[in-house]
Length: 340
Image (cartoon, rainbow, N blue to C red; front, top):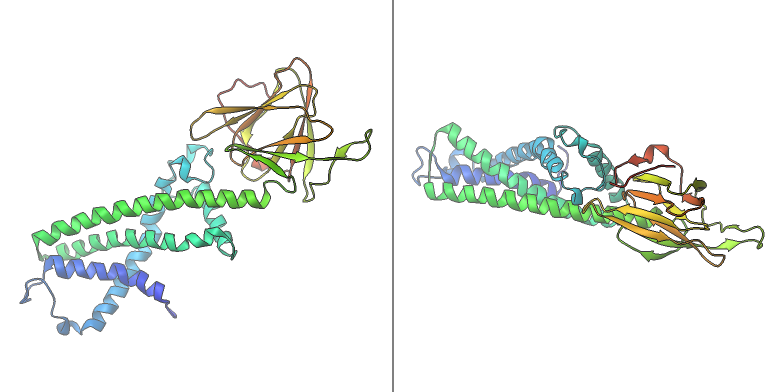
């Protein structure tokens, strides 16, 4: 097994020790004068018990990580606020026994973030360890009872009931602690992702729950204006001509960062859906001026539609940090669509 750290020893010894406490405390060992405890010297002493606790605890922890924890993890990810991608289709819910796309991407991002010394995600590792302690304490109580029943030992009724209540308390605390951890981790990961790539050089002036508003400057002569070179990381600019009543979008992105600019002459509407409340927020995208260009940026995972509700043709400028057709996720926003 190599050299075990103190945390690893404690991780394995804790559930093993609880198993022995249940077996030797709740159940009455035959032939024991105390009526409920082994004679430690008869089985080699405390050192042997410590070894047994490590072996049993190691098995409990391994089975917990391999079977029980993934199932609980995926069940908790049913809740939208606990997911990284709150707008993801729920078609994968049935697949409890296999890794979902949300789980895979979350775990990969967590491993990457933990390699960064200044990443706030790495600070949540101790929190995750506590969750495993709580879950393994539950399984240890169950294993202790199973061993006692298999051996056919009599029980101490008071301690038997107490261990049942401890099982419920540990499990409830584990699930609650786990849900809070996923919620905070999701927020930290989304914030870290936005801080790394959300603006790619575009200054942000306003921040809202579903979107941000940045500004771009104009450089060059009056007759040859162009966007200032903020997009210096492989970004691209696309033009979309919207006829009166036409819409663009009706999707969301998980990685690609988009900024929408209305060059005029009319007004465009940006519809954004809150996937938690299912409410749609509408933002009036005012035409750009020569002194300042407003760029509207839907946050990652927020479904959006741009609509030309005017009576004249209008151009939409789309600034992206990178082109990635596979990062377009169609979703119904409950708005009649006439996609351009």
